[in-house]
Length: 266
Image (cartoon, rainbow, N blue to C red; front, side, top):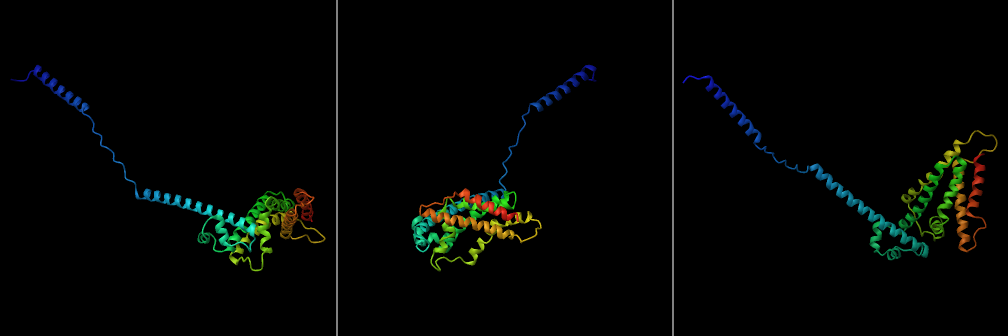
């Protein structure tokens, strides 16, 4: 039968319906989502984790070591102040801190090394305090006053530590204390903390003057330090006999400050 307009229209309608059904079916078909696998940790991240853990362990170990070292030094200080250098032994220190003598050798190879650390710790504390105060000083005269003031302030409340740092080695018997060159080399840089800043400020404030030459700046800084050490020595001596000086620390410091201010202006 030849196609008619109706049959053609019907065919067109049928074809359109099939296409529409196919499109709807396509829309209705669920979309499959592929799961995303977690990426395994790379070698670099694993290494970083191990290194971080190692660093934490080392930090803890170092903290424990420093704490043990400080405990030994404090025990040695007590023994030294009680028995003096001649009467102090590593055995006595080990008993005081509650460790074996072998454990003590892990931190300090000898009694001299142990005593040195006590002396050095006090000197370093004083030198750093002086340096910091001198850096804030307005001029050379103020810097000299700062040397005296900070040195006295560092030890006046702690005269036992002053004696330990400055006097114990003198009153000990000949050969009782020996600091080798390696140990002494650690003390010498403290001179820069004590004297260099004041010497620099004194030199900057000086112009050309006629008459008697002024005291060399670094020597003047050293003399200010000596004045403080002398003050502390006398203070410690008289207070041991419960016969304190009639002048207060502040009066003495102020007196030295005026004397050195006059010297700084020359």
